[in-house]
Image (cartoon, rainbow, N blue to C red):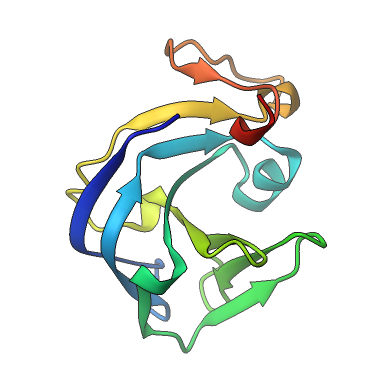
Length: 139
């Protein structure tokens, strides 16, 4: 579906720096998620890349808190500044990383929109990228 690019030693952090990370491995291109949980968590749709869980290491974790957002997944955020950083499906071996928390340049592109059936009624998706009513795995 979406292209993977090799990125070595990508890094990122939350707004206040209480959570910082490095990724040593390939990142998936960015996917915009329009599900109801992302709308409520981010205040709008969310843009995520994805990496192997073992490729992500925390260089600062004092602010990291996890929220069990469903029986299938959890969300990692900074308890100090409130930044949303991670989405992790339980037992998947991968972790989604909020693209806006990556340090530039990312060398990534936006590849698709998912859960567009749940998108907010105050915006349109008109960028010509592939759209999926639910997740990409359900098509």
